[in-house]
Structures are given as structure tokens and as C-alpha cells.
Length: 538
Image (cartoon, rainbow, N blue to C red; front, side, top):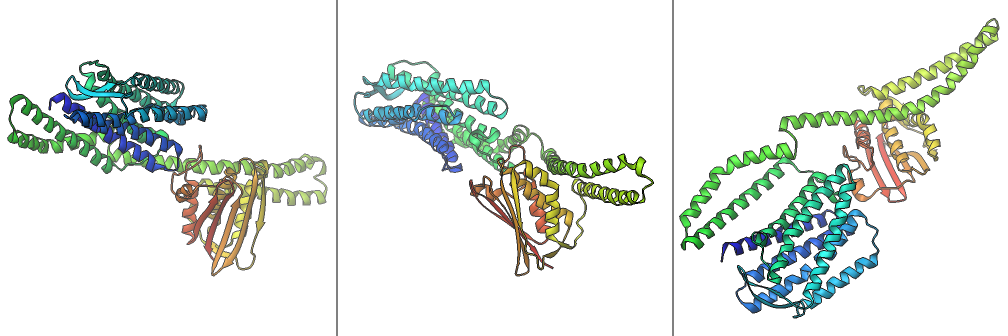
């Protein structure tokens, strides 16, 4: 077996391995997604071709080679249709379902002809290979269909790359250039069928196909291609890269040994042992280099720098969440302050002409004192939220904390066309708690409910006591959540909002737990969510 044939087998094997691995990974991440299923079928078509192609070029028997090549071609002619389907889903192209149906019909037609001489006439020796396909009458038409679909898909990928920005541009960049390289390299396998041989491009061009899948994997990890969000621990990345490098070394050793066998005509066991010892000696330096590479290009720094950056990021996000809450408070407070200021302005405007009127002075003192007290109370509430303080647990009525929170956002609720109803269980509702912290927790939940009802709706708050607990239910008629979202809703930095930081509900959960309480959520898509809080009664 010559060295070119060995390279061809290695390239095809890597293609099949990477195609199956990446396709299966994408499918596992979301089996319910039609998009993920299409990408899996696309990857499976490529893996089918590459793995059965190995049987063709490794066979020295003509009949077996013909069988393998006809099986391999079945995968070949599903590649273009699944590629187009993948691009249509990825870019949300406005393509009629009937067009895709026609494409799959053509692929099934070509696949059904693969066992016949109309598609593959024979398998004969070609160039450095024992056997390769000889085209039938229909084969050139099938190849034309293949490249028309590929060019169409690449054209739309390039347009998306040229017109997009930010993360989407990075996704499209990796996908376009790796797809272009993969189809140039992989498409070179059609040339020997028509008795055309371009040195180096065949078989080395086939290595471009696994490179395409590696680039796709990088785009998934680094730029969340296909909306797949993965968090790798550094140890996992190190292990994967070390394993990959080690496998490449062993493949290199094996190829060197085969070259010596073919060139010198003997088995070189001592040379193999020497090469393995060399790998062992170089393993630690390679591992260190890999760690440096991962730190620099995947994690952007050393362990200490990353820890500092992570701490700063958490502080910035926490400040951002606090500012969002403070902004909502400020909006409500501005409205609440406006009424007292109007009263003060009215009374002061008559002060000069009525300052000798005892009844006026008495009323002035009462009204001004009352209105200034309201303003002072509102400002104190704002400072309590904006400036953290140690919790002060005292006996309090939770209903009053809920009502005080609603006073701050009543105007916002009205503007958002959200109706509010309250149903309180009055007897025995006193708990030990921190009023300002509980108000922050309630405010987070109310804001969350408001965000879930952008077109208006109903917000219902009810309480009841049972077995030493006070149960508080906050129900909305918003968009609801999926089971996956519910599973992560209280995790820090997890958010379903474009502008959210993912800290609001995490802070709420911490506050409730600091009060020895519990919080849970149930939800139905398009029907709404129910947050239930349990707090121990005194």
C-alpha cells in the first residue's frame, strides 16, 4: 500500500469521524429542533460517503470495490440537498417547502440509481488507487446537481457574512471559508472519476473536509453557532487537546514506519519504539504549550488574570442589575414626588398673602410636613435599594412590604396596561425579616412579570398561611417559560432577555433563602408563570 493511498484512507477516516462526532453533538444538544436534525443528516451524509469510500479504495477485488463505491455514492447525493436545507434553516431563507421537497426527491432518485450501471458503470484501477469509480450515463447530471446546490449555498453564506456584524459575522466567516475549503478539497474526489488527476489536491485535498468540521466546532464553542452555548472547564479543553495531539503523533509515527517499510523494504520495530519514546519525552513540553495556547486563545489570559476578570465582571453585572432596579424605582419615585411638590408649590404661592391667617398657617404646617415626609420616605427607600446594607430582621407584616413595593411601580403598571389584583389572608401573617430586602425581592419578581407581559395582562398576588408557613403567590398572564428555562431561571447570569443580566432572580432566591424561606416556579408557554414563596411565620 503506497503512501498516497495511506493518506487518502487517513483523510477519509478523519472526515467520517469528525462528521459523525459534530453531527451527533449538535443533535444531542437539541433533538427537538428541526434545524439540529437537518445538520445531523447533512453530517451523516458526509460520514456515509467517506467511510464507505475507504472500502472502495482499499479493495483489491473489483466486485467488492464496485459494491463499496455504489453504497458510498448514496451518501454523496444527499450531501447537496441537506447542505441547502441546512443553509435555509441557518439563515432563515424564504424558500418554499416544495423546493426542498423537490431537492430531496432528486436525491432519492439519484440514490436509487446508484446500484445500477446508469450511475456507476464499473470500478477500475486509477492512478495510485487499486480501484475507483467509472461514471455511468446519469453520473455527470448528478455531479452537476451537486455543484449547483453547493454554489447556491455558498453564495447565500457569503451574502450573510458580508451583511452581518458582531457575533453573527464571526459565525458566518468561519462557516463560509471552512465550507468553501471543504467543498474544494472534498469536491476534488470527483476528478479521478472522469480520469482527471491533479497532484496534491488528490488525495490531500480531502483533509479539508475534517478541517471544515473542526472549524464548525470552533464556531460553536467560540461564537455560539446554531445558538449552542457551551461552557468548557479548562481541564476538559486541555485533556481534549492533549489527546488530539497525542493521536496525531501516533498517526505520524505510524506513517513514518510505513514510509520506511515501503522505501527500505523491512519492518522497523526499533524505529517504532524510538519514536514512541520521543513522544513520551516531548509530552510534558507539548502539554505546557497547549496550556499556554488555551489560556491565550480560548480563555484570554492566565488563571490569576481570568479569576480577576471574572470577579470584575460579576461586580459590573451586579451593579448593572442594581442600576436597573434603581432606574425603575426612580421612575416611580419621580411620579410620587410630583404630587407632593405640586401641593408644596400651591401652598407656597399663597403664603405671602395669607401668612397672617392662623387657619392657613396651621394647614400649611400639616400639609407641608406630611408631603415632605412622603418625599423623605421615598428617598430613603431609593437609598436602601441603591446602597447595600446588612439585613436587619424584625417582626413585620409581609402585606405591607408588598403594598409598599407596588406603590413604587403603580405608574409603570398602568402605562404597561397591566391590571393588578391582590388577595390577602389576613390572620397571622407576621414574619421575621428585613423589609427593604424583601421589597427588593418582590420588586424583582414584579419586574420579571412585567417583562413577560409586553402587551399588557394581569398580575395577581395572593397569600395564605399553612403549617407554620406564609405562602405568597405571584401569578402573571405572560409568555411563560419552557422546562429548560425553568431549570436554570435562578442561576446567576442566566437570562432570557436581550438586556437582562440574569442576576435579578438569583438575588431574589438568595434573599428568600436568607429569610429561611423557599421559592419555586411553575410555568406554561403562552399562558403565564406562577412564583410561589414560602416564608416561616413567627
